Length: 94
Image 1 (tube, one colour):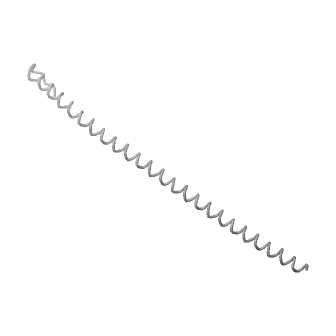
Image 2 (tube, helix red, strand yellow):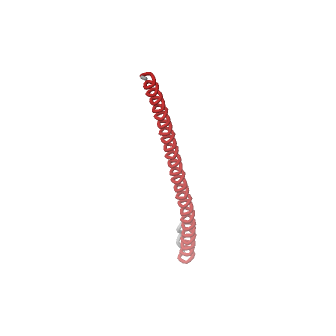
Image 3 (spheres, one colour):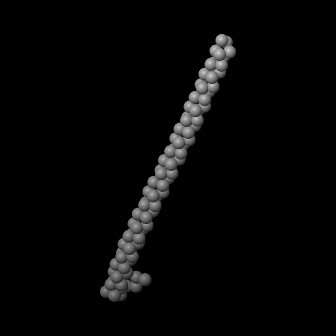
């Protein structure tokens, strides 16, 4: 009778150990999936930051070109004004 009881206890111990190992494996898989999700989120954040930076750089380049156009226009106006002064008053403004 004791051997039957001991065998039942060993079998219960094996089942308990198998369940513990299975739970540990599920926990490791869950942690791995969570780490992968965090890495994917970080990649997404980096891509969003990169896209934002590229948009800002593009906007800055567009504004710089626009300002360059205005500066060129103003230089033209100033040059025309200087030429008019030189012509009308005999002043050398070069």
